[in-house]
Amino acid sequence: MSEVNYQQPISTVDTLIEMYTAGRRDFSRAELGNANLQDVNLKGSDLSYADLSTANLRGANLRGTDLSYADLSQADLQDADLRGALLMSANLRQANLEGAKLEKADGDRNTHFPENFDLVKAGLQMREE
Image 1 (cartoon, rainbow, N blue to C red):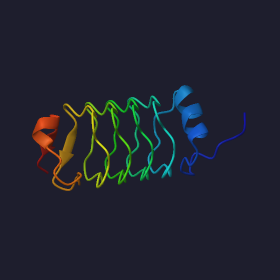
Image 2 (tube, rainbow, N blue to C red; image 1 turned 120 degrees about the vertical axis):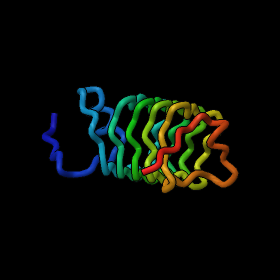
Image 3 (cartoon, one colour; image 1 turned 60 degrees about the horizontal axis):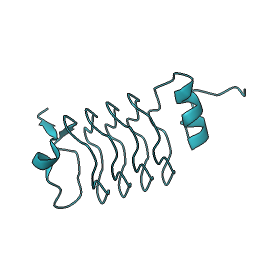
Image 4 (tube, one colour; image 1 turned 90 degrees about the horizontal axis):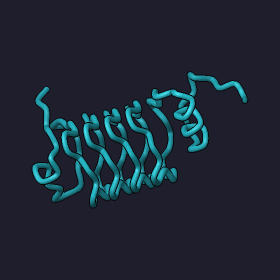
């Protein structure tokens, strides 16, 4: 196994999955824009400040994941499990949230959702700072 410099942000799907399988959960500042993460299990991970713009996260298990300040603009989150996720100041503009499970996920006034997205219907909790 090659030595990994933990100071460098994660930038490949293979590295992310290998580290998750090995028990690591801190992937803050990962650079995975346009990555194919369909059906991946990242439950309980820290993906704060990550670039996941235009990523395919369709069907992904992101339950309880910290996505605070993450860029999820134009990401495909269809049928993803985001229950209990932290979405503080996350950018979800133009993301596909069709069928995504968002019950008890937390957002704040700086969290940006797609136009006409119904926060109440999705079961999101909006926190005041």
